Length: 132
Image 1: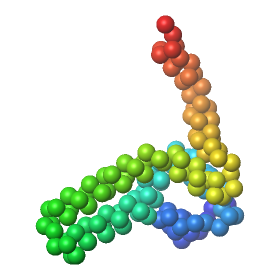
Image 2 (image 1 turned 60 degrees about the vertical axis):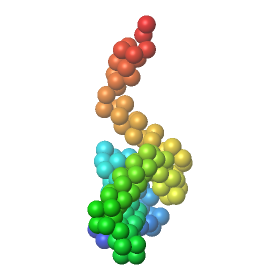
Image 3 (image 1 turned 90 degrees about the vertical axis):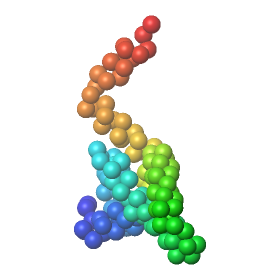
Image 4 (image 1 turned 30 degrees about the vertical axis):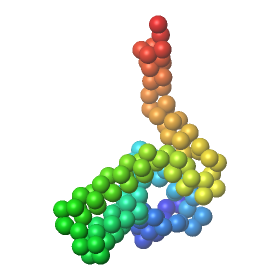
């Protein structure tokens, strides 16, 4: 079952869907664009607001020069996205687990999809890098 456009927008910006949409959450966590969706969700939900807050505090409360405030905000954006993307697999697994699926389900489904798309991939990898 697919949620309404309003609920999908709510979910995209970090909201929680009702439990009846668990299959939709699993599908979005395992489709080809899961990482893009995760990146946008983290950017809108956490990193961008925190970056804006840091920049505004520097500008308004601490009377920092504009260049310094923008540089600090940009660095916060880069570090925040790096950290979020470094743990994207674990974060998505936690999200899927909150909807009642076993830990590792999303990663396993993505791996199965990859193997089904190219079944000889592992054999080519082993032949190229594992043989001596």
